[in-house]
Structure formats: C-alpha cells, structure tokens
Image (cartoon, rainbow over all chains, first blue to last red; front, side):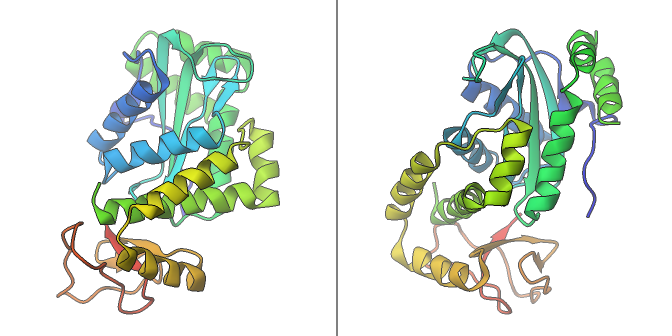
Length: 154
Length: 114
C-alpha cells in the first residue's frame, strides 16, 4: 500500500486562496476540488463525514493550522490537499487562532489505523516547523505552494 | 440522502467511533494534536442517522458488521474491498433507494460502488 503523496504534480490539489470564511464552507470548497481531481466518488457524503469528524473534536492543531481528515468509503485515492486562507478561518482550535493553512487528509475506508495515522503524521509534520509553515504561506503561486508542500513532506 | 448513502455514512461513523474508542489510536491522535473528546456527540449523531434508515438495510449492515467489523465495503474495478473477491459480471450498481441492499456473494458485506 502506498502512503501518499504530496500534491507536487497535481495543481488542482493545492488551493492557494480559499474563498470561504467559515469552516464548513472551506471543507466544501476542498471536497469539491478533491472530487474534481477524481479522488472522491461521493462528494456530499464525504463532506458529511468531515463535518461529523469535526463534531468528534476540532481538527485545528493551533498555530494557524488545521488537519481535517476522513477515512471514508467515498475516497478512491489517498491524498493530502493543501489550502490557504488569507483572511483566516475560525476552526475552533485550542489556541483560538484563525486557521491560515488547511491540510485535508483523505484515506480510503479499507486503510488500517497504522497506515491512516502514518498519513496523518506526515501531514501534521509538514506544518510543524515555523519555517516550513512560513514557506507554505508565502509561496507566491499555486506551483510554488505545490513545490513548498512537496519539500515539506520530504 | 438515499438508503445507500446513509448506510455508507454509518460505515464512516462507525470507523471513527472504533478509532476514538481504541486506546492506542487515542494516544496517537493526541500526539498529532487532534482532539477526540466529542464521542458522545458522535454516538448521538449515529443513533439519529440509524433511526432514519430502513430496518432491512440496518439489519443487514449490523449482521455483517458484527461478523467482520465492517458491514459495508467499497467496490472498485469490480472487486469487493472487504474480501478482495471479483464480483460476477452480472453484478451492477443498484439504485441507492432500492428496497434492499446488494451484498457481496463471498463475504456478505453491503456493496458500495465507487
């Protein structure tokens, strides 16, 4: 099983400026992008799963980063989508800081806990260092963001 | 939401609940900074969803879930992701609102075509 995968080549998986100001709308925007890239078979269902995950506990990690995640039947290909919000989104993070960087982590339902947590770990690690967060936030274009994220993922 | 979509969502919720109830998973998720303190809210949402689904679907789902841990499996390239058996060529995706679910002939899980 391949553990995915920075969106280095698929620019549709990088959203350099989310239009949405609210968490649910931002999730919908990202799910639409995932669906457009063929990663998802049922966009509406995935959005419901993501919203329910947020009810289990916020995925705001603090320091302006959120890691929304789903392991769902609707997911065809595992992937991490990276998105930025210039304005910032209220994600109910523990430090109450608005979220500027969102790493949507998607895994198919059949993945084991180990594989799923490894993917989540890679996503979280990519934004742990202030230096790499800054690179992701300041990349001037969608290509730059994809490159910065690929570097951050190692 | 069709019966098929509701059952698929139930499958996703059950995976989250299992993960949130596993001590090892809780430790790992906490290390990553992910909170999972809302299990009662998720259980309530599950109960509400299950109440709204046709009992023929939920009965079938619960029976296979008790047996295998997961009551529903994605079908990709005609292969059941639960047991990895190739489905017969006569098997086709059904309308999500059909009166009863479609099962894998090998493992019995409800099939979700992707």
